[in-house]
Length: 491
Image (tube, rainbow, N blue to C red):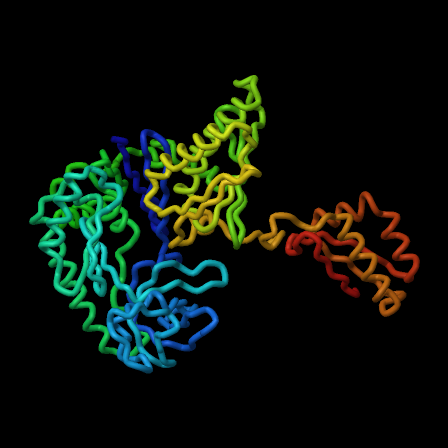
């Protein structure tokens, strides 16, 4: 069993949570007041409009962007009375048969945070997570965590779930329940049920209104990750240490001994060599131990990853070199996807291989590696062009998006206009406007980099412009200007 450690750093503005696995930095969570995730929150919302082409509705849940509700995310029984004609319950309904109405109030849960220009994705299938189970409010099925692999344990947990499942509801048994007593699981189910019924009283108020709110990132991490695979949870804040101990006292008292309070003078993230690794979390180019490297680019539509042999020379045969580099790259890619919490469509351009058995080996290796990831994957085959396509579940904004923001210079493009092109814009401006300012004293204001370029390398061009329009022309460097931008001011 792979052993993990959870390292928690608390400051006045944020909480940082690092998950270490066998000494390797594999997961990172960041909790800031202004960047709180809405995933898991339950709202009473109001239907604003229905989009028949998308088979979806937009719902006002009281935040900046409206929620996107696919019609197949609405339980059949909940809206069967709204059907235009009587339909027998065994009828397999189609999304277009559901007849929502504008201004209708509906209870929904956020399943994905806003991303780019898109609002949050929501569902009417409500689930309330605990440490051992997830309570399904309007579904009746029973599920067992895929990370519990022992058949005997799964069968035992299924029998327990069947016995304690509340009437009209369903439950999913989580990984932490594998070593829990049936009484502990039963007690949590009752607590979650009562909590939901208590929160449901808020739904009597007019929409939009928040009904149920997920706990902060720290308690969610303890609830979802702090299981028997974790050796220690080390935190550098006394109040937060007390908060974790108090929470575990209610849900899992025997785990309290694994929580440690860090009191050394050296910052906790420096002590465990995390701070240095965090500095490279935004890097586009990542070197592999063998000398190869991968290049990771994230766009609105997909994530592209290119694998290269680089300086690698440990194998002299091309096929062996390509295979070893690809396998090494896949291990690093899986770690990076978890660490940066990247989701959506991912396309990996692997180094071409000739032998089919080597291609099959890579796919097997990749499927084995992702078992450690809690996110869901859908994996395609490796194409004849050496492309591996797969999707990784995306529910929250990626860590890279939360740690960074669009560059004000390149405006998020990743590149900025060349100085030579900017010179062309300056020339064309004077061609179009020069006669209007003829004989004036003017100042060309621009970025320091472009100002130096014009003054030092194209002084003759600027002199010719001044002569042609009888101008006294000065160039002024101003850090307020983005690269390529400029302004001509008459003095």
